[in-house]
Length: 217
Image (cartoon, rainbow, N blue to C red; front, top):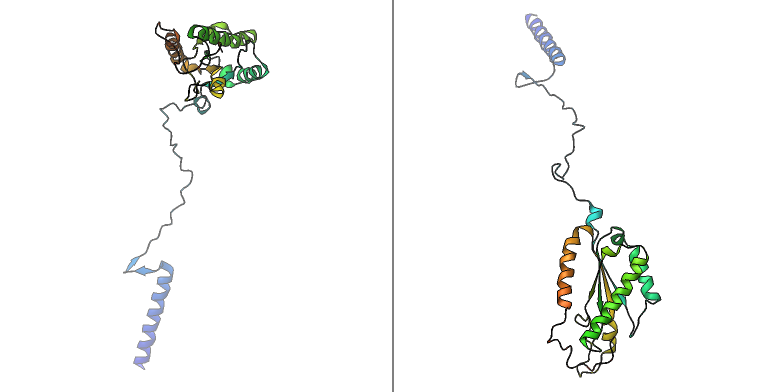
Protein backbone atom coordinates (compact mmCIF):
# COMPACT_ATOMS: atom_id res chain seq x y z
CA UNK A 1 0.00 0.00 0.00
CA UNK A 2 2.86 2.36 0.86
CA UNK A 3 4.48 1.55 -2.47
CA UNK A 4 1.31 2.49 -4.35
CA UNK A 5 1.07 5.79 -2.51
CA UNK A 6 4.75 6.54 -3.23
CA UNK A 7 4.29 5.82 -6.93
CA UNK A 8 1.24 8.05 -7.10
CA UNK A 9 3.16 10.85 -5.38
CA UNK A 10 6.07 10.57 -7.86
CA UNK A 11 3.70 10.64 -10.87
CA UNK A 12 1.93 13.70 -9.48
CA UNK A 13 5.27 15.46 -9.08
CA UNK A 14 6.36 14.68 -12.65
CA UNK A 15 3.04 15.93 -13.99
CA UNK A 16 3.49 19.22 -12.15
CA UNK A 17 6.98 19.65 -13.63
CA UNK A 18 5.60 19.16 -17.14
CA UNK A 19 2.99 21.85 -16.55
CA UNK A 20 5.68 24.25 -15.28
CA UNK A 21 7.76 23.55 -18.40
CA UNK A 22 4.83 24.36 -20.67
CA UNK A 23 4.27 27.65 -18.89
CA UNK A 24 7.91 28.72 -18.82
CA UNK A 25 8.87 27.59 -22.34
CA UNK A 26 11.37 24.97 -23.49
CA UNK A 27 14.61 24.58 -21.63
CA UNK A 28 17.88 23.82 -23.42
CA UNK A 29 20.79 22.79 -21.25
CA UNK A 30 18.85 23.80 -18.19
CA UNK A 31 18.56 27.41 -19.37
CA UNK A 32 15.68 29.24 -20.93
CA UNK A 33 16.04 29.60 -24.75
CA UNK A 34 15.48 33.17 -25.87
CA UNK A 35 14.90 33.73 -29.62
CA UNK A 36 14.53 37.31 -30.79
CA UNK A 37 12.97 37.94 -34.17
CA UNK A 38 14.77 40.61 -36.24
CA UNK A 39 12.60 43.24 -37.85
CA UNK A 40 13.00 43.50 -41.64
CA UNK A 41 15.29 46.31 -42.75
CA UNK A 42 13.49 48.85 -44.87
CA UNK A 43 14.13 52.29 -46.33
CA UNK A 44 17.89 51.85 -46.67
CA UNK A 45 19.15 54.90 -48.59
CA UNK A 46 20.73 54.02 -51.93
CA UNK A 47 24.10 55.53 -52.72
CA UNK A 48 24.71 56.96 -56.19
CA UNK A 49 27.65 55.64 -58.20
CA UNK A 50 28.41 59.25 -59.15
CA UNK A 51 30.40 61.39 -56.76
CA UNK A 52 28.43 64.39 -55.61
CA UNK A 53 31.54 66.59 -55.54
CA UNK A 54 32.29 65.95 -59.24
CA UNK A 55 30.24 67.78 -61.85
CA UNK A 56 28.63 65.31 -64.24
CA UNK A 57 28.99 65.98 -67.98
CA UNK A 58 26.09 67.11 -70.09
CA UNK A 59 25.66 64.05 -72.32
CA UNK A 60 23.77 65.95 -75.01
CA UNK A 61 26.51 68.57 -75.29
CA UNK A 62 29.25 65.93 -75.22
CA UNK A 63 27.65 64.15 -78.16
CA UNK A 64 27.83 67.23 -80.41
CA UNK A 65 30.72 66.88 -82.87
CA UNK A 66 32.08 69.40 -85.38
CA UNK A 67 30.26 69.34 -88.71
CA UNK A 68 32.15 68.46 -91.90
CA UNK A 69 30.38 68.54 -95.26
CA UNK A 70 31.50 68.77 -98.88
CA UNK A 71 29.93 70.87 -101.65
CA UNK A 72 30.82 69.47 -105.08
CA UNK A 73 31.44 71.57 -108.19
CA UNK A 74 31.27 70.61 -111.84
CA UNK A 75 34.05 71.52 -114.25
CA UNK A 76 33.96 75.26 -114.96
CA UNK A 77 30.99 75.80 -112.61
CA UNK A 78 30.77 79.44 -111.49
CA UNK A 79 27.43 79.39 -109.65
CA UNK A 80 25.88 77.21 -106.97
CA UNK A 81 23.70 74.55 -108.54
CA UNK A 82 20.55 72.98 -107.09
CA UNK A 83 22.47 70.21 -105.32
CA UNK A 84 24.86 72.69 -103.71
CA UNK A 85 22.04 74.89 -102.43
CA UNK A 86 20.18 71.87 -101.05
CA UNK A 87 23.33 70.78 -99.20
CA UNK A 88 23.70 74.26 -97.71
CA UNK A 89 20.08 74.29 -96.54
CA UNK A 90 20.72 71.01 -94.74
CA UNK A 91 23.87 72.44 -93.16
CA UNK A 92 21.92 75.50 -91.98
CA UNK A 93 19.48 73.20 -90.17
CA UNK A 94 22.19 71.32 -88.27
CA UNK A 95 22.65 71.74 -84.48
CA UNK A 96 26.28 72.73 -85.04
CA UNK A 97 25.16 75.62 -87.25
CA UNK A 98 22.66 76.77 -84.59
CA UNK A 99 25.40 76.73 -81.94
CA UNK A 100 27.03 79.65 -83.84
CA UNK A 101 30.45 78.04 -84.05
CA UNK A 102 33.09 79.31 -86.46
CA UNK A 103 32.66 78.27 -90.11
CA UNK A 104 35.71 77.45 -92.23
CA UNK A 105 35.34 77.08 -96.00
CA UNK A 106 38.22 75.42 -97.87
CA UNK A 107 38.06 75.67 -101.64
CA UNK A 108 39.76 73.02 -103.81
CA UNK A 109 40.37 72.34 -107.50
CA UNK A 110 41.72 69.50 -109.58
CA UNK A 111 45.17 69.72 -111.15
CA UNK A 112 44.05 71.20 -114.47
CA UNK A 113 45.67 74.60 -115.12
CA UNK A 114 48.57 76.24 -113.33
CA UNK A 115 48.89 76.75 -109.60
CA UNK A 116 48.00 80.43 -109.55
CA UNK A 117 44.87 79.97 -111.66
CA UNK A 118 43.75 77.01 -109.55
CA UNK A 119 44.27 79.00 -106.38
CA UNK A 120 41.96 81.74 -107.66
CA UNK A 121 39.38 79.19 -108.80
CA UNK A 122 39.34 77.49 -105.39
CA UNK A 123 38.88 80.87 -103.68
CA UNK A 124 36.02 81.75 -106.02
CA UNK A 125 34.20 78.52 -105.13
CA UNK A 126 34.61 79.07 -101.41
CA UNK A 127 33.35 82.64 -101.82
CA UNK A 128 30.20 81.36 -103.54
CA UNK A 129 29.41 79.30 -100.45
CA UNK A 130 30.29 82.21 -98.14
CA UNK A 131 28.03 84.60 -100.06
CA UNK A 132 25.10 82.18 -99.81
CA UNK A 133 25.56 81.89 -96.05
CA UNK A 134 25.81 85.66 -95.59
CA UNK A 135 22.68 86.19 -97.70
CA UNK A 136 20.88 83.81 -95.36
CA UNK A 137 21.79 85.69 -92.20
CA UNK A 138 25.22 84.41 -91.16
CA UNK A 139 27.57 87.05 -89.75
CA UNK A 140 30.49 87.37 -92.18
CA UNK A 141 32.88 87.62 -89.22
CA UNK A 142 31.96 84.05 -88.39
CA UNK A 143 33.30 82.74 -91.73
CA UNK A 144 36.89 82.03 -92.78
CA UNK A 145 37.67 81.35 -96.46
CA UNK A 146 40.81 79.39 -97.37
CA UNK A 147 41.88 78.80 -100.97
CA UNK A 148 43.72 75.48 -101.25
CA UNK A 149 44.03 75.23 -105.02
CA UNK A 150 45.04 71.74 -106.13
CA UNK A 151 47.22 71.03 -103.08
CA UNK A 152 44.98 68.63 -101.13
CA UNK A 153 43.30 66.19 -103.51
CA UNK A 154 41.05 63.50 -102.08
CA UNK A 155 41.58 61.34 -105.18
CA UNK A 156 44.45 61.08 -107.69
CA UNK A 157 44.19 63.65 -110.48
CA UNK A 158 46.01 61.39 -112.94
CA UNK A 159 46.10 57.72 -113.83
CA UNK A 160 49.36 55.76 -113.46
CA UNK A 161 50.12 56.39 -117.15
CA UNK A 162 49.74 60.16 -116.69
CA UNK A 163 46.35 60.54 -118.37
CA UNK A 164 43.66 62.52 -116.50
CA UNK A 165 41.67 60.61 -113.89
CA UNK A 166 38.27 62.16 -114.55
CA UNK A 167 36.57 60.57 -111.54
CA UNK A 168 39.36 61.75 -109.27
CA UNK A 169 39.31 65.27 -110.68
CA UNK A 170 35.55 65.44 -110.24
CA UNK A 171 35.93 64.52 -106.55
CA UNK A 172 38.64 67.15 -106.09
CA UNK A 173 36.53 70.07 -107.34
CA UNK A 174 34.88 70.91 -104.05
CA UNK A 175 34.41 73.21 -101.07
CA UNK A 176 34.82 71.64 -97.65
CA UNK A 177 32.57 73.13 -94.97
CA UNK A 178 33.71 72.82 -91.37
CA UNK A 179 31.60 74.14 -88.49
CA UNK A 180 33.29 74.06 -85.11
CA UNK A 181 31.39 73.51 -81.88
CA UNK A 182 31.99 76.34 -79.37
CA UNK A 183 34.71 74.61 -77.33
CA UNK A 184 36.60 73.80 -80.54
CA UNK A 185 36.65 77.38 -81.84
CA UNK A 186 40.17 78.18 -80.60
CA UNK A 187 41.60 75.05 -82.23
CA UNK A 188 39.72 75.82 -85.45
CA UNK A 189 41.28 79.29 -85.62
CA UNK A 190 44.76 77.78 -85.25
CA UNK A 191 44.09 75.20 -87.97
CA UNK A 192 42.79 77.91 -90.29
CA UNK A 193 45.95 79.97 -89.84
CA UNK A 194 48.10 76.93 -90.62
CA UNK A 195 46.06 76.16 -93.73
CA UNK A 196 46.35 79.74 -94.95
CA UNK A 197 50.13 79.54 -94.59
CA UNK A 198 50.24 76.20 -96.40
CA UNK A 199 48.01 77.49 -99.21
CA UNK A 200 50.44 80.28 -100.13
CA UNK A 201 52.29 79.02 -103.23
CA UNK A 202 56.06 78.89 -103.06
CA UNK A 203 58.25 79.94 -106.02
CA UNK A 204 59.29 76.31 -106.54
CA UNK A 205 55.73 74.93 -106.69
CA UNK A 206 55.20 73.23 -110.03
CA UNK A 207 52.09 71.06 -109.45
CA UNK A 208 51.86 67.48 -110.74
CA UNK A 209 54.57 66.72 -113.35
CA UNK A 210 52.99 63.58 -114.74
CA UNK A 211 49.40 64.76 -115.16
CA UNK A 212 48.30 66.18 -118.48
CA UNK A 213 46.92 69.62 -117.65
CA UNK A 214 43.77 71.22 -118.95
CA UNK A 215 42.20 74.67 -118.31
CA UNK A 216 41.65 75.64 -114.68
CA UNK A 217 38.97 73.67 -112.86
